[in-house]
Length: 185
Image 1: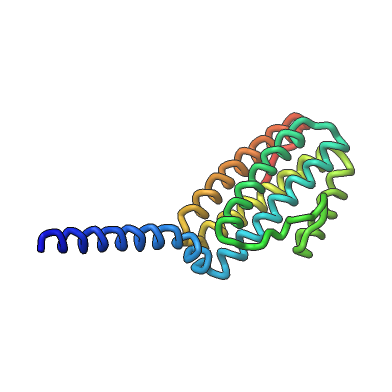
Image 2: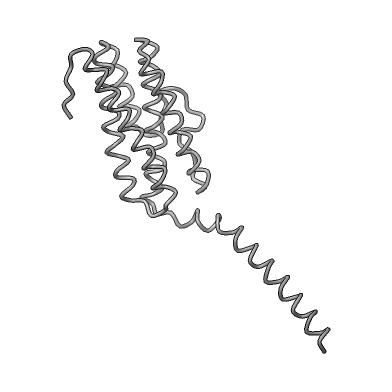
């Protein structure tokens, strides 16, 4: 009788363990389905907004050779990569996939890119002010994304990107001061 009980206990232990493993591995699939429409909107929008910043900074660096644009364009690539990680985790199509410099799925961002490149092409000061506008916009949008997020990983990424954008804004303001321009939000 004791041997029968041991065999049944082993069977239940194995079955229970398998069920536990299956439930743990399926959590990722369930999580993808529980994002709100607003969370999905902000993830896809922020991916392209970070791309816009990177693309503009690359273009302005090519024109003016100001180190700030080179340095911050690399940071913006890191921001894009962080959002891409979330898109992959939640199985959301990447709106930036296969898109070159200045190419966007979002019409507003496409138009803004053209406007910022035109503005930044007139002078170094205008280029730096374009950077200020990008970072101010990014800060506002990241705060909106944070407010809509229900997932800790999303709020963590947005919060980190927000800190980066605040640092970028300070750098642009500091560079503008070298030209005698005072920052006014």
